[in-house]
Image 1 (cartoon, rainbow, N blue to C red):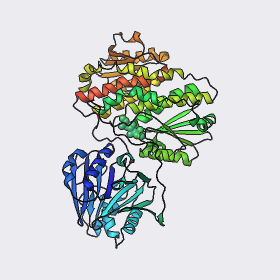
Image 2: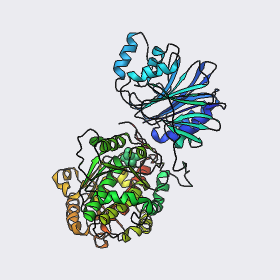
Image 3: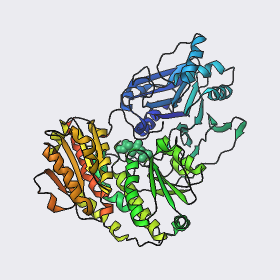
Image 4: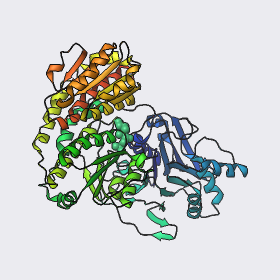
Length: 589
Ligand code: AGP
């Protein structure tokens, strides 16, 4: 992951780099640094921790600089491993992974060069200096030719106070021209004020010097069209809430309302509806929370449209040998639109002949440039690392997709229940506060299990992921029927088990699992839409959900689970917005 930024212009670089780094912090926040060029010297400021730790760097003087916010891959989070990395005449920031860095490092060391960090990235500065016989672009080309893996690079040379160099392979990189100078950045929102924006493609280089931007490929200079943006970036503040996560949960009803699409009546989807008519198989590729929304969608699509749906974790799909038959539509679901594994899976599906549809919350993200069709969730920008409203928005959109697919296949599909979901989500939110009282019990648990059947299984998976992510408690989600096939051995006096029960046909079956837990001393929190189960002796605490069409119920049942994770994280003294070791957007594999 990691976020990179570069600036060259007439203004002081440091304050601009810091502002942009703050916007890139969702990519990693375990260490950060900037380097600014001043009179043929680099002034460098690096710190372990968040971008806020760089406050002291504001005073660095110079009008060209580069910056980095890190999510450690090689080497612990520390000052010495923080970027920029310097060697000889060069300073470099890197996002990506250099897979052959060990071999390259040995080569450099054999020449007598010394390394100061444990990172894979430092080798890039060494190679640049080695290959530089006077022309920086040639040195950059030669260096990139030696690198195996992925990189987005911003580079400065000590004696070029008015120039920045950039290169990209498999990691996103944007170049922009603003009123005050030229920029490179990992994403568009980081440099939202730039009137002119260009997206570097794999194998391309850029030179930003004084007022000029030039683009190159191996064969020489190339022309490049400006990006056509579909939206302008927003940077929401906490709006009076203690944390972004809670604020974003409160925005769930609006996120759902805005993400429901009426494909049949909206003329923008006429071409898409023709594709739906010819769809015989659906694949869904995604990671983490987005993968869970794919599982929920599978239940709905198979039931409503009677079309087989395969849901695969993107990192498995990309290295598998996926079968694409005629009529395959592949949904690549990604809140950020920048997840490396999902991008690679979407690309592979496209190369093998599938119609690729991106479902994303980020209008101008990388995934929109791969997909044949883009379906935008309208959750608004999500800042907290733990996905909440974006998940509910994905479900709203995927449910709309499922009903549209069913209709195009000549099946009767009732859309009306979809429209009631925002109000039901509002009611659900108003019922979760009592979980605050339960949180201290969860906070001291050794592990927590989530169970559910059918569509409830998806909620179990997502509830468990949320809890792990921000409370750091070991947790698993299971189909309720699987409990007795092994995991029940872990349940003893006081073990917390969260049961989700919204599917009438299997309600008694899930209650059997609840009884089995109770018999072993487990403490059950029941999330249900059936009032008759809330008073059962096996249930310690319950949340009653408003009545809802069963196949849509994960969009509601996940809300108390998100709240449980939030309250538990607080009870354990964790920052729910920035959990340890994680980042909002996972741009490396
Ligand atoms: C969700 O809470 C997690 N932060 C994570 O699992 C996330 O959903 C996953 O990394 C996929 O991200 P994406 O939707 O941006 O592709």
